[in-house]
Length: 286
Length: 339
Image (cartoon, rainbow over all chains, first blue to last red; front, side, top):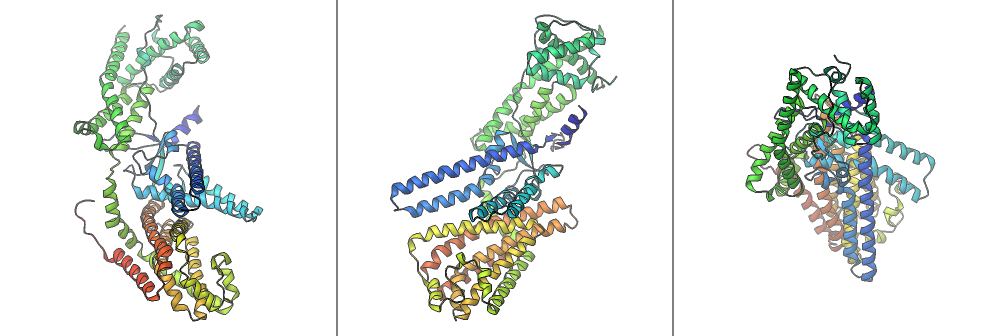
């Protein structure tokens, strides 16, 4: 529990808006970013293959005449895919490539100001040494039959050194991020969901003051999570635990209704305390 | 009993807090979704004016919710909404035309002027490499094959006859494949330039080596032509595009050196800030380098094959160099206002 909370805190960075509100941005973790990059990589490869196939069909259809413009278009398109794909998407309004969008993360300036185009360019040109150079060294060598163990190991170490760079700094920055003054943050699109305390209950439960004093805010938030997930067995287990703690017998069929009622009462109780200036962080706090 | 009444009152007021503001949040969310997809031009005047108002009301709702509500989902929703709004409203974006205009009128020449020390160093290194290449091949022919890979030399080597060497210079080639060749040269050169830039990260050492090697290549080629009395002609053949291309590669190397030296010696700034500053100047330079290499590719792929007079070749090469130098170092637009 303690380690989980520390991990959550360490990826949150303050972002004070000019209006003076701290938006507490959350940095994207390394796994999400790797997944986003892989998605983009797959998109690029598929696009390159499709373009090449179309070019080949065009070549066959044209019988060699007009191969020239086709070749130019092909070479330019591939060039753009390799170099401009990331830049164009990240310089756009949502500052994210399709891969990043799918995982709802985006690029942001570390200073909190708007992301400028030269920052986007700087962070993406560095991909050349992070990904494409070791890749082309290994590919080129194996093509020439020169892929000895040593050069493969060198390429691998190089690639790993850069690929794992985000794991070695607090802010999860790539080398490109470091040079551009950017970082990658979570930018989820959340929908507004129902307020659980407004739920109407079929059965009324009544709780005493002592029963409501058993838990604090941390437990309330966990309870909210369980109620929103709405999993029968989880509800049953949580209802039993709470029932034991506050001394109530709960029938398994009633667990959802019981938890909803308890959540509503507990929240009202804690919110009232909050208004009066005491923040009961968890059950250990008196 | 008093506590129970208090609880209900709090619950009631928090419920009305949400129900009263919900419409505003929803409206803000819908507006954001629209402007993120399409240009803000598609919004009506009223909608445009309401955007910052809705943003501020969402922010204040967030402050209230954080202080009074324990509904995690609500706070999370408001945080995500405000963050989206913040990124959009403070993104300070200019129109594409404005950005392009700014780049050519101001950013590009300014970045290159900023890099003048590294540029001088880079040019000097190219010449040092050139001298070294020339000297090495003059001393021992064996160096030629070591410096220039046979695939690149295209049959040119120290033992080739003057006739063969001359033919390469003036061969009009089959003009069919010229523009394709230009496109190929362009993409290839840009990859090399990006490499020279990106490798600068390793404290500038690889960039320096790359620039030296580039000069060496040139020097070795020059030596075999000069030895056959064709130095002037090779100069023409190279200069038509070479002035632009070599200058561009020198600039890319300079950008790489800037990054490497700033990371090694950040001065009064923190290493992070120094790196970020250098990265932005270098990135602007790199866009310029790409444009220069596009020009060079066109000159090389088309101009060189079509124009076979030495004088014209020198004139075009010299003219291009003068043009770049004037543009970078003499051309200054005085700007008014804060941008």
